Length: 450
Image (tube, rainbow, N blue to C red; front, top):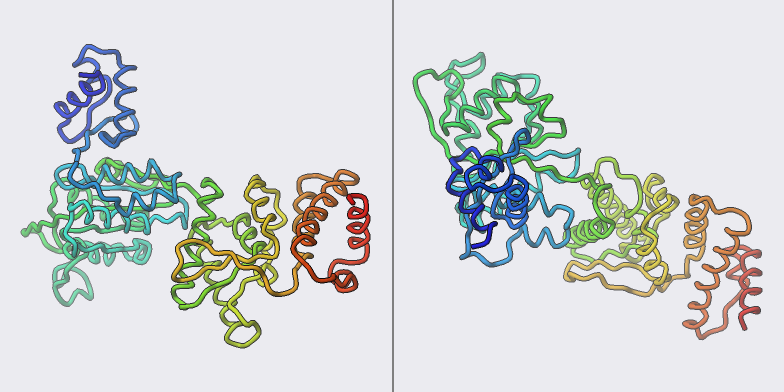
């Protein structure tokens, strides 16, 4: 038997529900702590163990399930969101942990997708037969009642008639309604101390009392997933956070890869296409802008901005301003268009876009893949030149160096253009679009290259 297997067996033997330290396992086996710690971290990577706590770090084993091999919702989500690998593995481990899973705290900035991730966790629990198909998923935003702690607690735990002014009847709380499922507490840092105390008692024993009750203990089997944008060490009671062994941090949009942001943009536009029942056409420069603009409120803001852009395009379509639902960069708000002018580290991806000038992205409700369609309208050369010029300037290029880079890009553009267009080009029309000086420069470059 390999050492890692021996460590895993010892972890299962010693774990009594609160976790085991690497030192405890090392002492028990007579092995070095460094080797045991390395094996435990590897087991975590393989989904066989999970870390809990910080000082000290404890490890818990995860029950292996071999009879469920189908790709789950979390697996599909991970395919297009690889930066969330650790978060997904932690979520799986929390759901699979015997006997009823681990309570979870999700950390992350506003708009990173905490509530969406919680829903995926619920779906995963159903897929892994850890919860019934009809198990509830109840969302409660603690901020909604932050100014009335008594009412907030009664919403969660229920209340007895006469418990407070206005309590005219017995009220069932969300803890009872979520029995057999998940209760998601958003902005949990707005939960008052008395509410936190009631929760850690519930998480310890699975029992609670409605507000105003003293002699009756109630039971409910609920997995608690809470979320906050704040530092839990500074805004939550230690007694509360100690009852939440699984802490998952979701990265901000700026911490995620350009490919992931691209996938999110495509997903959101497809969703709008599905709502409209029509295809949505998006210019390459609009895609560049969505990829690069500053989006401080993360995925939530990105999705909202895309929805607004689609709504405006649809309004232009139904008012006959446009023949199609089409988004051009000129239609976007300035703060999004600014993404075209920011220095970008995504040169490779932007170059891919530049290779398909005169084309639009076409998103169709019936298509999973992105289609490409040649733009039938007059080429907007100005968009390409303007964005390219500003990008080069933002990188500090000036003078002769800037001119050489621009000449090369213009030459590349028109070389492709000349190869694809068979009819005679009306130079006066081009001059009206890009100006006489640019046309003269292009003609000189063309003459030299012949």
